[in-house]
Length: 581
Image (cartoon, rainbow, N blue to C red):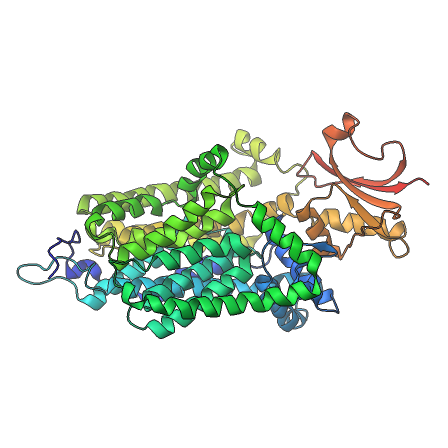
């Protein structure tokens, strides 16, 4: 018998089963809200869609193996998201065209894979946490006269908590809705976590699943995304842990992952050697010695990105410190630690890299709840109620000020950021926002007046509050966000000018054009650019300040055919030039 004392103190009433329809409802609202019926935004969102369209447009199939944006080699990540997205567009866009215009049908079809990535993530998080929660190490203290939860009920409570906490994580809510590699890499990390947890009792299926997850992670984000997941899976097999007797199964996982990665790498190297050189250069140069700027950005940004899970993850590590090598702590700790360690050796880090910390932080946080005192649990409840009631009220206040002009200062602060926006009301969107607000009010009423004994009431409030806030943003503010972040209008203007000035007869090259802008022009109006230096038409991206200071190219050697930009961005500007011979 293990002599260590468990920090978990729990009664059977605290692990009352949460409503399955409630969990299904909030997960559905989470992923569906903001996924469809909006424009792709720069940069990652629209770049992902552009690689899918380029793959479908390439008759040779080369852009499927080596992702491109038109003729620009997008040699950074991997092809898996492009493959799945292109397949979804090919299968479903013709069906959607029966009901909506062709460009919008393509956009909607391209986001269907997000449902797959989200499903893999939540399923893996729930079942992986459930497997660890059922083990003997995390079980709560047995009470003198009974009344402690059963092993099954305790495992289910931990799994429900992990699911609710990943839904409550602030930093990934937008990222899970974009057409990029981020939702997929989160999903495959969660799948790798599940596979490691499964390997304890079913090593064969766990090893096969782990190999598939690692290979898929490599095809999704290259070494930047796959390396921390591979290291986490390797170091999860600790000599003092329950996984150690299963370590020889890692050879099978490694063989499967290597076969998946090499099958793509050898094929693309034979067909596009230049692309593979650029890919390898980008991946290798992304790593380096730790920099103070990277450490500072981690300290500054990670706390809000991982809110509200990181404080509870730290509490779990402290309260379970005597059990740190037990699988329920060690496995998620490895999946948390190695992304953090890897980020220290990256040249630049931001949300796509932070995203690999969301799943393990939520799982660790779930194991902190059985160790918390009643007063702390009640504090979490009230903090969630106050915080998300305030955020919901703020979203409504901003929308009311935009529509009515009162309060005047708030109206002024908003409208100066969306100069030229035509203010209007979408009553269907307002109706959905009202329903979401009433649902939040009902959840708060349930907590205040029913005083439920369920330990997970705080996580329910946190997840419900974040989902409510997100729902309000993507209903009330979606037209404004589209206006501020979409290039649809600029692309349409440029397409007309190119048609007028000989796009069908002349090639066009780009000067200073950002990757997000290039992708947007391809997505909205199928505008392609050439690398031929003989092209007389040039699309130049610059700024108003650079124009005033005379710091832009072709100032004296080109005729300006068109000049434009997004009204919401008063500095960025595009110029269509014809070079004089």
